[in-house]
Length: 354
Ligand code: KG4
Ligand code: ZN
Image (cartoon, rainbow, N blue to C red; front, side):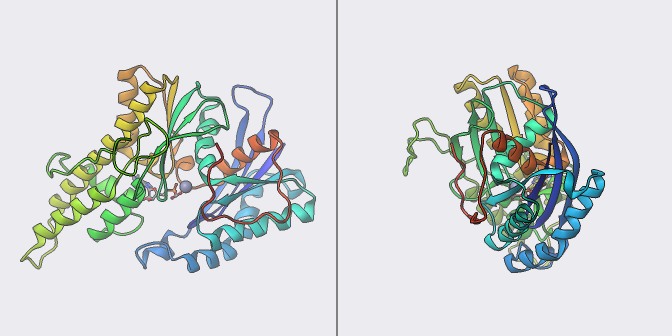
């Protein structure tokens, strides 16, 4: 059985083909994974412009699907189901993928399976590594989300904590913007940080516990907050620039990037590993665009080795937005009996079913 996955929730138009195999150690195989990035279009504006994103999805989606089929050496007639991101994301962008998926499902009499974007990111771990030792603590870190889940069995996600304000990727993007480094900021800050000193600038790590004001419903829940860190970077830059017309020196920018990145990575890993201990998990996973970060990958692996916990992270192609993860999640949901009708609608703030 081959699943065609479609992902258009933000600024990547993506299509992929994933095969369901008979091998229990590797139940899914990626046959093709095509992504058309719109980064060059949005860079000019310093961030994603929703209307431009939807219009570009319309232009790209047919070509991306054709390319995915060609790369998999398959024809449309070989596809057994269509999986599509229903939300969360930009509603106009989501609608393009959804309209395409519904049309294809109707024309070919194929089952249509809606997928939550974050469930897709979590499934990227299973797609890459096969079944993880469970229960697992999984951190999803992207441009729109920073959420920590307990995965007791495949396909079930219990929320342990999430950001109260900015997502980690969003903080990267905002810091890059205020330093005039370009969009998307994550990969640029990651690269510059390599030549900086990570303790050169003192920046705060925000700790939020359930005892704080606005305490969440779940006792022991661990939330994140990144807006204070972003503001601290802004204050530092303003203070350094005060009275000077010239931009910051290259070495100073590198130090700031390295210091910011150290705090982000430590915050993420402190929470992830304390949740892992508290819930006696058998493994930890990190998924989403920020899991492409070189320091996060290296530090997570080192900490896992120290704490005797296996750490799973997807390859770079499956870390950032892609449709292979959506096809994989679609295959899992299809096996669970999930089907959508042609009245399926996009939901910009779709909650992850728990
Ligand atoms: O998962 P994703 O591709 O899209 C969303 O669902 O949001 O994540 C995109 C985010 C962006 O904020 C981008 O700056 C960040 O992931 N990102 C990184 C790196 N590569 C992408 N952040 C830090 N370091 C990276 N190497
Ligand atoms: Zn994503």
